Amino acid sequence: MTICMPALDTSVLVRRDRIIVALQRIVPGGVLTDPVTLRAYECDAFTAYRQLPMIVVLPETTAQVSAILRYCEEAKVKVVPRGSGTSLSGGALPLGDAVLLGMAKFNRILSVDYELGTAVVQPGVTNLAVTRAVEGKGFYYAPDPSSQIACSIGGNVAENSGGVHCLKYGLTTNNVLGVELVLMNGAVVRLGGNELESRGLDLLGVVVGSEGLLGVVTEVTVRILRTPAVVRALLIGFASVEQAGQCVAEVIAAGIIPAGMEMMDQPAVHAAEAFVHAGYPLDVKALLIVEVDGPQAECEHLIAEIKAIAAKNSAACVYISNSETERLKFWAGRKAAFPAVGDMAPDYLCMDGTIPRRCLPQVLHRIGELSTRYGLRVVNVFHAGDGNLHPLILYDASQPGELDRAEEFGSDILRLCVEVGGVLTGEHGVGIEKRDLMPVMFNEIDLAHQQRVKCAFDPSLLLNPGKVFPQLHRCAELGRVHVHGGKVPHPELPRF
Ligand SMILES: Cc1cc2nc3c(=O)[nH]c(=O)nc-3n(C[C@H](O)[C@H](O)[C@H](O)COP(=O)(O)OP(=O)(O)OC[C@H]3O[C@@H](n4cnc5c(N)ncnc54)[C@H](O)[C@@H]3O)c2cc1C
Image (cartoon, rainbow, N blue to C red; front, side, top):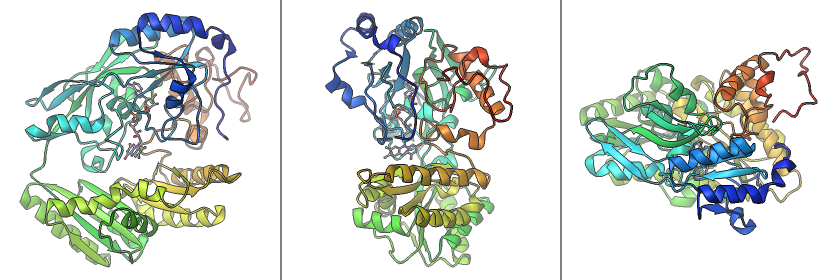
């Protein structure tokens, strides 16, 4: 384990029994304490890191969440919020001296307003359940993480999650209109509302993507959209990654915003084909799936333009879906790519970084070189349209040192993303996975300013500590932090 978490606070551990009694009073029947049950919560989808929580509590109402947080703040007990536990960056990793606040029982869709195009949902509702609830009336919820069958809307808000269709329809932040948020002191606040215009400071924008560090989301108002009249997909193969990358850049430069534009490299194509037999061409070095949606005439026009751009970039093959079954078959391989890669090695790390689109060929080439240097295979599946890479690094955790090597390889990929003008994360968040790389992108002043926002919401630093910030300064220190020669003042102070 190379990522250090905050040291256990023994002054909390000795009070565990008292804390359990207090929580049971707030949520009768909703407090889990025995080690076997707690095991189910020991990690999220960043499974390389595991840690039993001290206690799990499963509230059902906002009033209970408020009472739990107020109690924990008074008793100086840390709290880790959790949705469905599918975070790939360790955002929901429990702490041994913290309460894990599971939001799974907040699983109701409260209301839908088809005239306004909004739905009010509880945070434990799964992403796909929102679309399922409104599709009968010809609506859907646009952000579609591949984990949508399991991940919760609360987790989506905390991670500002994306998906294939976010190229055209925006990430979670563009599709959330308001939230109810409980602060660490128990205060219940509402940010945003049910319309795009926000009154006052856009604190909703601050909370979306805040990774459970600012408050606990207990209700979310999302935008729902009319299902497009026509949806069609193109499958385009190329003899080189460079050609595919250039095609992506030229489609966007032509003013076309496809509903989705995904790329898979040859190892990913082979893995997916072996897994679901989607009919992918196996001789291409890169495969693009480009989806267009809208009225029939618009789709036909866009398909013709994209075909012409593909031809100009020497596409080796172009297939266009002529039925819904065919379109879904094109997507089947892409959607199964992650589990398919799971068949190639005992373990893999799924990286997430974003780069300017024009750097795609250069970055993929450098990732190939790093793969040789580290002696670990890598498979690339990614949201090409928005430059969001997901290199999957294959390794075997049972081999001594391989996890460390895989993590170092992953760090180099993220450093490379920043070096070419990109960012450390596209949609999976920082969590613990990228926490120690934050200084690659932000200097001490940037980080101190970000932490001031944290202090404004959670001055006792009790909510999800150990995540996102490489060093968590005491709030009182901020404003006086002067870094000389790279040395942080008062190094003797515990920073978490
Ligand atoms: C196979 C697979 C595919 C994936 N594909 C994608 C993808 O395409 N796009 C993408 O963006 N992500 C993807 N993910 C990552 C993950 O599904 C998302 O980050 C998702 O939003 C996490 O939701 P969750 O409910 O599982 O949250 P958790 O994992 O439980 O928590 C994630 C973070 O949210 C916080 N949190 C959870 N609920 C609340 C709440 N109510 N209030 C405040 N904070 C809260 C937690 O503290 C934590 O920091 C994928 C994951 C897997 C395993």
